[in-house]
Image (cartoon, rainbow, N blue to C red; front, side, top):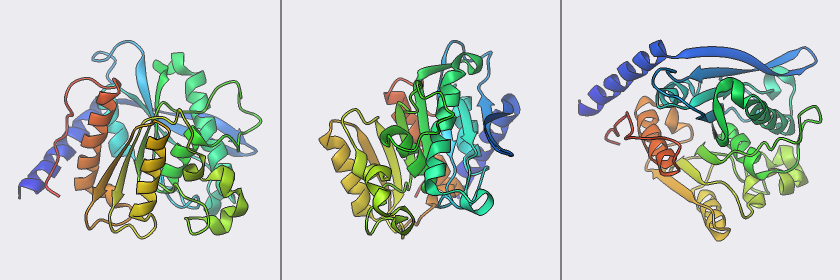
Length: 281
């Protein structure tokens, strides 16, 4: 009962935040007749002043399907905490005949667009956070770690690299035996985040269900170990009994937002205590 009441309270807070927020849909990239958009969630200008951190979300779906509403709750919450949040659309296989490599190009284009228009959106280009779930988590990590797959029409003088990562059961191993290898092949050596961790990799927080049938726990532990080997922070949260995509459940949206809030506060991107409380798991 207590958990249900906390979830209801969370939903009420989210509704209040949404009513107070301004949203906008902008086109960040055009490929032939395809227009790719960013849904922007602005914080309350009367409450937050100065340059604000940016938070960019990429939906999951195996680089094939599209779910633009997947991270709306998180975007609303973190906009309410003073960040300018963006939900990025990108080409996918089902609708655009796109390859996973096209998806990485679009993910990088989105960050470059946000940084190029930092003044317009009132953001600090040195405080850009990338996030995503599953294949979207791969894209977020790829913007930070993968040097290949840049759109020649982008302003390549602008780095697509974020300053921090918030990853939800991310696809980070595309090598033999890893997710998507049958589509990636030998290009995994320059496509797979796990195989491209280098010194300077941004601080990262990862959420994973222990019963995830796509992302083995050991793979994620290996990722954490490699990050720490190059001197980078990687906080790993494991959720007993939970499967792939568990973070979409209301209770776990709450709990993962709470931990992500603490993580971003520790980096100096947020101030004050989280405005959500953890529920019983």
